[in-house]
Length: 266
Ligand code: 13P
Image (cartoon, rainbow, N blue to C red; front, side, top):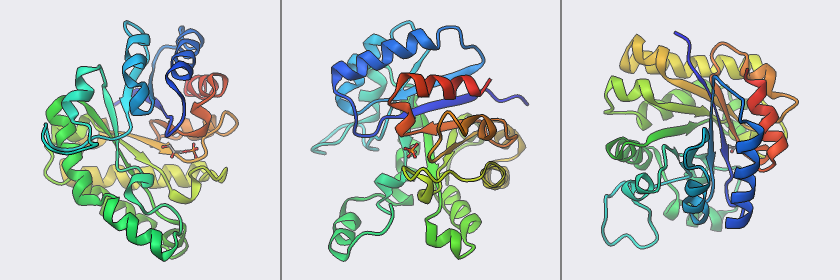
């Protein structure tokens, strides 16, 4: 089954409202004639609404970087799935390593703080289900730390994350999902994972989906690679058979770079 490649920009904590709208307007123009690739931008919460207005009727889709699993209530600071749906979000990133709190090494004091505020597979699983309830497609992130890779644990770590994060979903939901394989050591480091190795791990992810949800889900689910994707390495990554797109951080903040990555998927 041919899967449509999906290139998403995770803007992280970058861009004011004005900057966000400028970047979106530039991307709308520069990718106007691109067909056969789904394009998504995920601005910070403060820019989502103006971004959705700038994208009204355009071919680029809107995503958020997180949500909370409850529908409403006394949850100071949190954003409900229905609020994202209300302003036109089609996608939401869930379980990014920067929110899992397992990003690189941290000192003991910070580790304690992270363990209070960071999420785990259990919270990610709740968020995935909540996104589906609201009609938003999750982009579920997984990936190993450098120590885990060096210890030969990559496949076990990624399998374990997928099994826990997707537990209890229907096979139709699994089929429509996007999963991003983001090795933590490759994020923001300029050290991209080799394309054949990224392809291999994306294949492990697809096999895990097959074991959990069957062949239809495995052949339909889209698996992205993320971690130091740039215009000069994206073509090789995006033409691997198991890789169905990219989740791009730093290079999604510049219209020229993100456009070049989108076009390299063709
Ligand atoms: P970089 O592309 O900056 O390495 O970030 C990847 C990422 O974390 C996307 O979610």
